[in-house]
Length: 347
Image 1: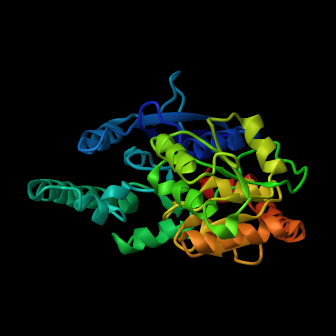
Image 2: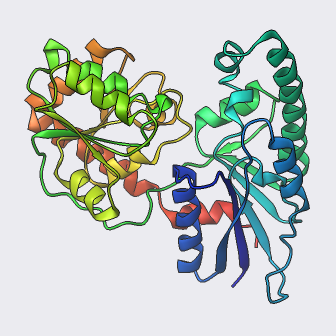
């Protein structure tokens, strides 16, 4: 039995997929007979990340609280990979995306002075990340090919791809019901507004959809639903618990998950574990790696009409939804925590 610390950063009072992965990893390690726990390190607000990197670098992760040696560290995202340990595996969610793939969008919002200031911070973060991910870790895995590509593009940093399995939940399948299900944080990058626009298309007439989650776009999405006359068939559920999540995954016709350049996206494999097809977009990142168009779901252009047509095809054919969902289940079965731990563990 080894003592293994799972380390990730988290902004205050925010739950995200990276914490689901972290807690699932801790649970899998414990199930495998190891002593493991989750260590949360700081991720400061924008503009104060330098202090967060330093705080992570100075965090003593070598001993437990009662003085026993920690045998290995597994870190997950910035800046938690700054912690130091002689056996340190990083299973990367993502770096600070505003300074990488989202830099152009950020720069367009800045004043000339702000561009100079943030450009300097960006260069410093790039240098720190390059050092930390090549010199401070023993082995580096990316949680998707999309993350692997970003590492190569910005820094030339090599990494192996290791997809996270579905969280260990009691998934089940009951039926291919009469509605589309979507679940995520309601933020711009999750692009639920695209789903609402697709449901307003003539091609999607009559399709019911339930959207679970909460976030900054909740009011805007509700306004869009009302102004487009969708209130009778499109509903925002707000935050749901695990049992409600599993119930909707078990009973929906299919799952729609159309984010923009998602790092990985647990929604995809959770839908597959429930024998449900996933509809995603060509620029959705991680989900578009796992969803093969016509095999276990639909991958369409990120515009309302093709998305509406993909949803229509599944709602018109329960048999097709079943065929795609069964193929998704086969993929989900191949992603196991036992195999994942076999690659992550150094002890």
